Amino acid sequence: EVQLQAYGGGLVQAGGSLRLSCAASAFTFDDYAIGWFRQAPGKEREGVSCISSIDGSIYYGDSVKGRFTISSDNAKNTVYLQMNSLKPDDTAVYYCAAGACRRDIHDYLYDYWGQGTLVTVSS
Image (cartoon, rainbow, N blue to C red; front, side, top):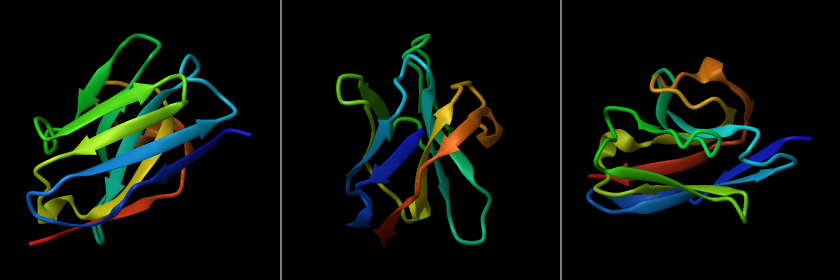
């Protein structure tokens, strides 16, 4: 059974950093790309970033470009999202998902979802 587990969220002050992790099981990154999404209260789910070991693609949403960095450790079957220069607008539940990495990071491209991890950025 494909499983994804996101963790690493927490409370951080504006300007601070957090690193999220997404651990995958029952598949490898040769099978699926990994995407990060977030959803803030009252807002639609937003594509944050994605990475594909299949074709080497990496994409970022406009709101996080230059601040967030996605990476993968294929040996550990884990994808990371390093988040720097955090802003209160980054506050959301962050999810990782397995699917296809495209420039338009849209949730319909992803088949499997993990539970979310909450990131709260205080001003």
